[in-house]
Amino acid sequence: MDTLKTRRTIRRYRRQDIPATLLNDLLESACRASTVGNMQTYSVVITRDAARKAALAPAHFNQPMVQTAPVVLTFCIDLRRFSRWCEQRKALPGYNNLEWFVTGSIDTLLAAQTFCVAAEEAGLGICYLGTTTYNPQPIIDALQLPELVFPITTITVGYPDETPSQTDRLPLEAVVHEEYYHDYTSEAIDRLYADKEALPENRQFVLENHKETLAQVFTDVRYTKADSEYFSKALLEAMTKQGFFTA
Amino acid sequence: MDTLKTRRTIRRYRRQDIPATLLNDLLESACRASTVGNMQTYSVVITRDAARKAALAPAHFNQPMVQTAPVVLTFCIDLRRFSRWCEQRKALPGYNNLEWFVTGSIDTLLAAQTFCVAAEEAGLGICYLGTTTYNPQPIIDALQLPELVFPITTITVGYPDETPSQTDRLPLEAVVHEEYYHDYTSEAIDRLYADKEALPENRQFVLENHKETLAQVFTDVRYTKADSEYFSKALLEAMTKQGFFTA
Image (cartoon, rainbow over all chains, first blue to last red; front, top):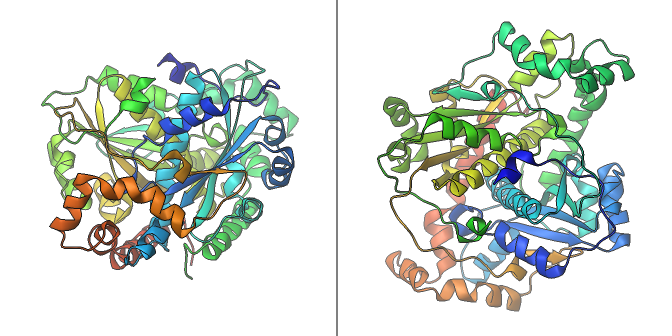
């Protein structure tokens, strides 16, 4: 399992298709992930068609991987299939609420990540698109997702055409707490972020963006408060429209 | 990677501790999972102490694994560490909203599932506790989670003391959609759920619960509409209290 430790996200892919048998095999592995009550509250939409990738691209801010990857997978929370089964079996489903949005997203993400581990082990490269939840409505429209189905993440997959260097991570002590949450002192924050702030690429990032600190690149450029509030509103609207939230 | 295909959830563990070096190694692998903007918006609380496990147990409806597993890991969305760093670096964080609850939960669950894959590859067994989001407040209290930290899933880990048979899964065609969502016809639902309904253990389950259909065991006993609505309310209250939602 050295793959887990040496992995890196791949954004450039060779012009080579992924055989359907391989993709199915990886998806079979994904479906062995833990799932609440063995309900499998997810669906996966496979996009290979160029026109359909083009339709998805704007929702992902036209990140090039959407159109250059041979396969785009949209992982969706799906309480519709299970609810339909209930309705056909004289049972009253109660999955149109926030609890099942969250529970469904857990199911879906465990399957998505298992897919990624299996794909990387098979020599493929993947990239997660966090843009999926920024403005889900265009994705819902493009993929014709009905009520109780919701896109939670997207993965582009293909044979790697690059070997990027591994990105840094915080030291393990930054994310692990023994027995209870030990809040961060100012000194701890300074110590835990020191290596990240000292990286040449991050110093360059600060300069290019004309900022004083690396944190400002995040808050002022990459992930601003105004954008997050806008996306939160769009997300809640889509959750409501898909039947997972009632004001 | 046959482990991915042959895995099963383990609920009974040997009385054998997990060495700290092994646990740290697995957590290092977990931290290599994809993460939004390399922000690592998660924390993991490790519970080994018997008294602390006992404090967590009621929140998980006293499922025995919480107290019999050598290690209990609570995976938490964490926007606090990053926000504190921003504040110390003259940057204005804007992560106290729904978008970052969802984005943080994605980060957290990819790390959690990577941990599980690594753990199983190392011969350990795991069990996810979906109860974590049913009533998060007692967990928040027990682990002293501050604002912008939220428990999204819990994993019990230990050396397996059972070899349960693998549970069934729906056929792959039930969860995969080519190019767009193909809604389920009545005939498709019948066909896709036929094997599951025919399993002897599921027939037994229906009999024991004095129900007419397997679906009714889910809707009337295991995951009722009334419970889901109650849990949704508790979840939204906790999300609000932890700073991720504003009414």
